[in-house]
Image (tube, rainbow, N blue to C red; front, top):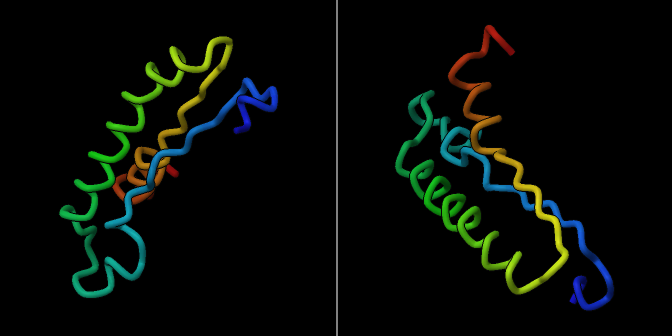
Length: 81
């Protein structure tokens, strides 16, 4: 609908590392990798859908923000952040 109204610039945010949120970490203090695998799979499908969207929406520009990597880097390397 936004495209039909003239929108041509889109930002797509991936799902963050949901297994690393405080509630998920509450029991063990560690990230739940089973939940993170679901987020990675979703993000992979989202990224791969961008080519189809570009084909279906000529003239559009898509930017993908990898929030999973950003959040995961904070948990994996807290001293460098």
